Image 1 (tube, one colour):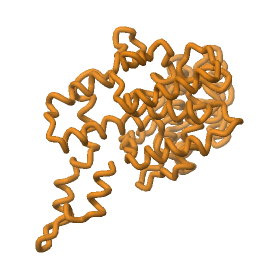
Image 2 (cartoon, helix red, strand yellow):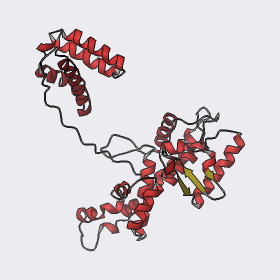
Image 3 (cartoon, helix red, strand yellow):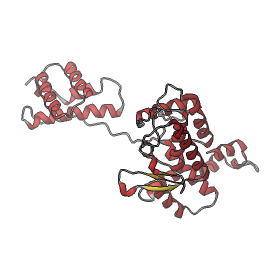
Image 4 (cartoon, one colour):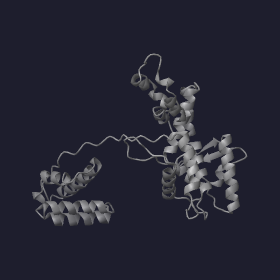
Length: 322
């Protein structure tokens, strides 16, 4: 069997099963063009490696193409159309080192102010809605999905609580609203009532429709850019809306450490508050707090006479703004 025929038959089978995407087909067609329409049994591991290394790509892309070709040759080996094919050694997986962005309180204020600048009349979401969305998401440490699914019936203004729905109904949690957050929610409800919207969803588009995650993510990128919040470290991913949840946790832990709270008691409470299971779910946030780096700061900034890093007013102002 020729390679061309083998690829076409394989692709037809995968299309029938609904198990192949467009980029998969492109991979096989590129492979055929490079190797040529030789007999399937004549393809070697060196041919595969030369194809994979032809262009400079990320390790993830390289491994994706590798898996596609490995499955192709396993398909024909099982049908005895070729002898057992030995693939070249795969590249080792790259460990993910992404670290969420922690917004400072100054940046949070800038984001909230920027909603008024970016949410123009042509936008699906008005400024008051998006500001309340971001504020309640940060103030409760909720996920984007939990905010999108929030119903009007989930807000109890009189008791000052909000019920955060989970995919598992038994994990729905009722959270108290602090004074400032409660006032912000009441203000949004008054504005919302004047618009005459009758939607069951608490946060909606201007015409009362349910918000989509693509819409809020698009709006957040505009707000973040208008607020001038950018990431300056080596990580390419810019601050995301879901980082508000991580920021909430880090800010709470930072405040407890400064006030001398017992973290053995507070971390389990934080896990329950955020709808997470186990202490380990919140311990990761402990590693992101500025206090975690104070020993490193002592090492990097050794005592010079009577001056230590704690005496650097600009540095301390930065830490206190986190």
